[in-house]
Length: 105
Ligand code: SF4
Ligand code: SF4
Image (cartoon, rainbow, N blue to C red; front, side):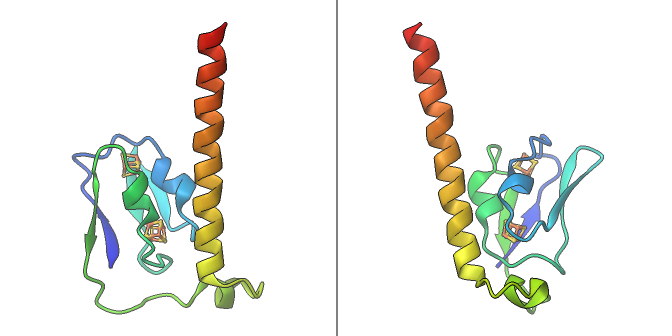
């Protein structure tokens, strides 16, 4: 599955760019745009879009090799995906803690 951006719903918040492990998304004129040649199909972008602007569509064929092959770092794509998930969760926890400490003041 590959992501497809509905530009009428995209508000340009950049969440999808930040979570994309393949750096396959760019903002163009304030709207997210996916480069299918880089996309790995993890759909993290879809999960983090606050407006539901990203939908999954059937991929015709895999257009890019795994990140590990492209970057030659010996890092598996799955590991990269999981690390990114953990990073996003930690950022969420940090944001919630910051909010809680502000409320206590
Ligand atoms: S996360 Fe959604 S609303 Fe935000 S830039 Fe990406 S597609 Fe647009
Ligand atoms: S599906 Fe994954 S790799 Fe593709 S654009 Fe979304 S976050 Fe990036």
